[in-house]
Image 1 (cartoon, helix red, strand yellow):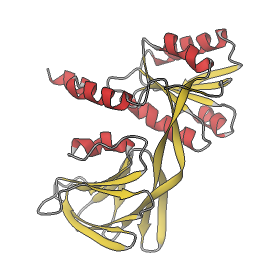
Image 2 (cartoon, one colour):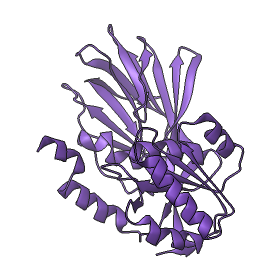
Image 3 (cartoon, rainbow, N blue to C red):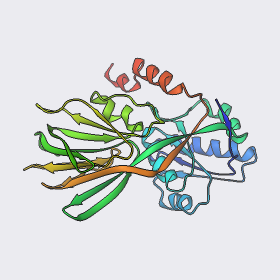
Image 4 (spheres, rainbow, N blue to C red):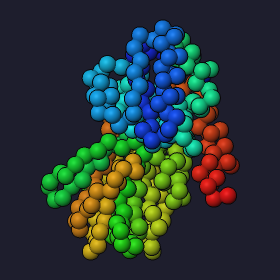
Length: 291
């Protein structure tokens, strides 16, 4: 069901930098919006520093992500910082997070400009890399943080604790700490449960555990998860599929919920999640390359 929302007047369109037709599609969308009275519209590749800085400066009240799920993740991180809603238009193959397909935006954008949409809040996590008492970095997480083996094909020993109390020790390829959004990403691929996107829970799933706890664990949003690495070979951490960060023996990753949320623009009713999930599983676009 739609609800009446603010009508955006300053719209930024961020597109995937390596999709050949993305700049042209972004320009067509920009002209469409301008032709319907939107005061300010810009478009640029999502990684462009000047583009991102304008958004951080609060110059826009809506961000359109043009690409696939990776582009949507980057847009979500950017929009969450200032509470700017994000609308995804799919130019990729999968696009599970995206709301609008390539051939639908001319039909659906007028509803945006009439305020006939709703906002869906998505939980985010904070992941902090610790070496003893020293913090080596802190990241926001929309899908998942993964602590796993590096280039050597050997499992690592990972000790997980919740709120300072020991939970389990895993001998595994890795451990995933995910949001409900991330429950349909890497966590789903390794057999984790599917969580509705509007929940506020933390999910822990092991990757290829060997004689270790092989059941996923769902925690409340107030929990603090710490994953400590014990290994004689390389281990790494990765946030939302980004470049891996090397971890040493004894390093830890501390994960808890962020107060900030990502706000996705939705035109579909609340049952869309399960309809889309069933459709993607029955006709997985990623399997096309294997035929």
